[in-house]
Image 1 (tube, rainbow, N blue to C red):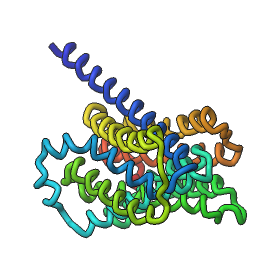
Image 2 (image 1 turned 45 degrees about the vertical axis):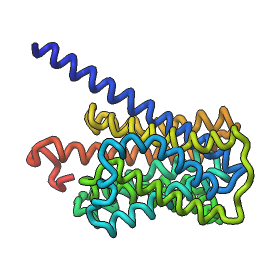
Image 3 (image 1 turned 30 degrees about the vertical axis):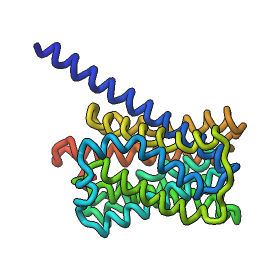
Length: 304
């Protein structure tokens, strides 16, 4: 009986890992599609049609939980701030990939967990010790390397990528604060925010789209929504400590898809910066997992 139970648990963990990998691939595919579309259409127009695509995925979830749940919100000010951050995240991401290779922009976003560690210390009272602070500073150094320390690091595309990654990190932190809110409600309101921002930005910037282009913009929302559901499910099937490193496959896919579809090859500084960021992020997660799973008297005296 125990053997069967262990086998069943092993199958669930494997399923969780596969869902995480597939979800990450779909997010990367969504990013590549977005880069292709922003070459011809405004960010606002893409956000509008993408939002309708997201609602195709969200509709069954909202129907299942009941539409009333959309209006029973915990901490409305934080909900509003999260909507603003997610909208900024998506908008700035598309603005960045319009000018930069996918791998460059994804390198900035891979620093998200590092920003989360620093922000959580002040806003979530999740104290971190000197080892993780060193890893945070190492991660920031990786971002600076990727930005190419020069006047070019202050170019608008680079600032879009950096600003979007910071907004993404704030979204993750606010998601922790609002964890009593269902995924469907959180994603529904962030989609409404993206729709409102898109309608505003598309004024005077709307152009006719072919059936293929319109379908691709709708697919952005469907693909992103499906990827979100897969990753959410994966976290319920397998331990976060096992899944977290798999999320860095996003960077690998960004390099592959960027080369296949756009001919982009990351330069040495992007590769070095991304390696520093990934190693710093993995160390931060390792230390946090150590603290959460091992008795305190078995951990170094700084506690983290």
